[in-house]
Image (cartoon, rainbow, N blue to C red):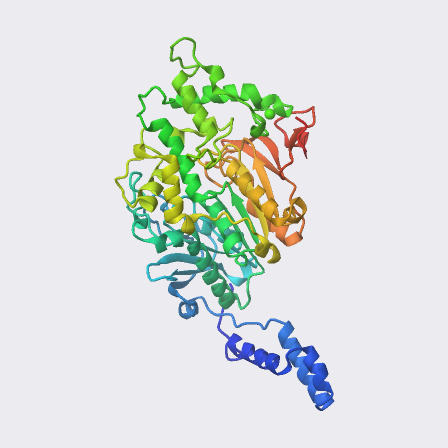
Length: 565
Ligand SMILES: [Ca+2]
């Protein structure tokens, strides 16, 4: 078994080597300096000096490998290490269970030996960003660092993600994003944010970056060399963290997969709250309330209208943006309220969900939901309680009042308030990805057309804004690609109601490591663990096109092409 030992007696420290290199740099400036010096100093002596200096400048010096326990005293600015401990297996290591909505269940096991480091970062006086960095023993290390993301306003470390990556052989890290949501409830989920703008900023963009910085310092110290590549793959808020990193900290990651990103937080929370408000503001007995039993009725009608538009009736609407479905076509006859149709008031509610919210001046705040999404409306619209995520956002981050009543929501006015009060902390909408591109980064953005909380067109909006900023398709698709995924559920393959095999991390790793951009990602859909269909996702704007024969439930019978419909 590998047993890392400090070996500092025989290897100069990084600081010492750096000082030596810097001294040569200053004295000689460059190899041009060597050539000039050639004329005035003894040739053989200077040749040796120049050769040594050049070697030192072009080759990264090997660092000493430090023991796991010695990482406790590693000096990282604004970081305190609280645990640095070698975990030997077997027996399997049981991850400490943690309470909270997103806490860790008992019985989560790690089967491989590793160095467990825990600590916290304090970039501001109000910050306390807890993190854990897990380092496989050197013989098991893939050479990669993979950051683990957080869904929602999560205030706990994602141990399940750490276990997954560690057992893949990756050095990995997760943060609680600077707050704990232990004790939070659906009614008052995010009280940590009230009166703490710096904690909102930590959640909004800083915690993931601080964690990446600490993780990389620990990696360099433990293995004696930096990671070969760093990757990020996560979904929902983790997808927003992905886009935030690409925009604000382009050197943190070499490859980033952003899934169903909670893009443009203030406007996204506005559309979620809007849907919950239009559905539930008058209670579940109001005429406009759509009982969840009718979602399937609306979904069936949408499929009847639009499934075949893409050339094959297979249960998927390949491009919902071309679907002109009006729920008014299934209005009940007379004034009846039957299970198989909608009342006029319910038609009105459904139309608002499809349309999405607008500012008072008519400008769209965020896109609405597309035809085909109906089976997922329950999270926002079933009630009787409003959606806790967006209601919690307005209660605490915008109004600072846990008693704020969602029925008073005014989407235009309150979205402006959200922009004004927290937009600078939480919104990452910068289309300029030039620094990330120059870093050599690859960005895979994927979005499920089935999203039940995040309108899928938000991802398209961001993609199109980057296309415009970066100079078009050619200049963008060599480092940034979008995949719109039909019919595979939210965050396909990401373990959230996981019923697919979409592995975005593997795709972006391959892209970064081989330089070959993905143009098609085949997915398998499972029922009770058994694959019942496969289907391709294509690099936007291409879509899956049925070849005209064979099973429509087999990806082999589709090509990626430009829509002909
Ligand atoms: Ca279809």
